[in-house]
Length: 140
Image (cartoon, rainbow, N blue to C red; front, side, top):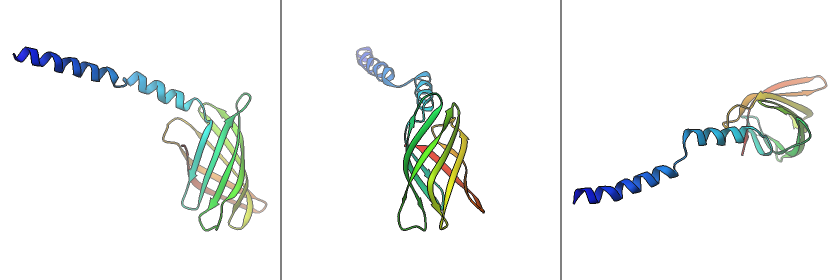
């Protein structure tokens, strides 16, 4: 009697195990996610947020558009994004930004090696002005 009850349980357990992803499956999925930067992105820091979409172009070129909002500002402003992605190095330039009451250009560079995102300095520059803001960029 006991044996006849165990066999169906073993079949169910084996079938359930077959549905779970293996370590290799998970690794392949992460590898695929990190091979492209195309898609929606967010950037967050205590002083500003970014929301933008990237497309991959010819070669290692990337471009896109979105919005930037300084925490103290009433509204977001439109931005454009250009850059390169030579895996794992992602380099971006953000144009159209407004920060602390002035028009600035932002640059960011980091290694895209984890689905957790890229943390680093967003360098904001204008004539006679320079400020680095630590930001976390993540694909959504």
